[in-house]
Length: 299
Image 1: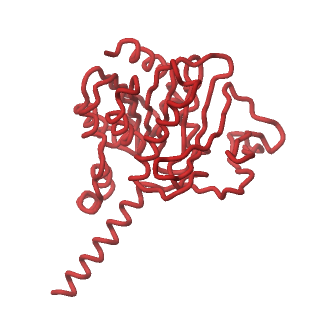
Image 2: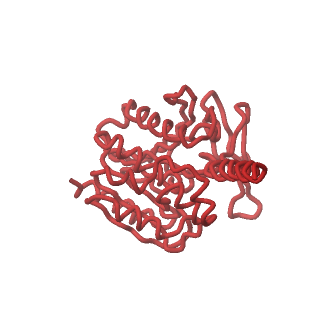
Image 3: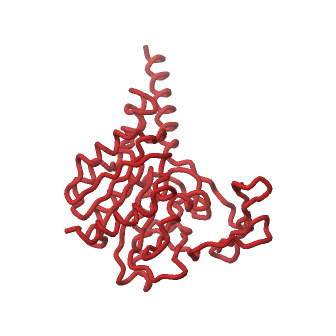
């Protein structure tokens, strides 16, 4: 009997560690890396991103020859998280307009800025500017990738954002996607007096909920709950826009319904199509309008 108990306990620990580690799957860059490659839609072209300086300032090129033309600038910065880790962030600004709305972007559970910027960059136009960053242990950011650190990092990113002169006199919106969508209501509810609105896209309702979706019974049993969107959103009382694709194959559509049910007014549910967190890629104009209306009509 004792042997059975030991085996079951060890199995539980193994599955628990495996499930909890699965939430964060970062791409890590060595501090001395000078470039990274990405495929493009054109057969013979490769996007080569060159990194320079202490902040790893990115320059996007085609085949290391022609600089990629963008309608926005990217300023790479380093800032300190409250736990002492040095984090890397990108500040995206429109080239031909002065921003009136600043978006703090909280990205998903995998990759790094070099992957994740594509999911939000289409919103950089007109009056929007975006600050996005890598959590501890992602990309060039120091530290360990843990759920605890992710929340600390998000708070520190908002602190940094508020310290910038080019953010003062703009409205601040937190926009979380996927794992960042579960995190965003937590940050927003804790700091709602400092922000003007919240957007989540493709968010899961809680860590246990998404674990149970992936692995029924065992997922809910072995995953630690911690913070969750469906609980945190109950304490948020500023304007809220929820976005989720009906075709999402990563986070089930019904989870956003759970979050939305727990949310306070004023709120709006924007059901879209296409892939997971592809809203800005295919619906940038309508999302921009909805954010502006949310801020204009919010209480």
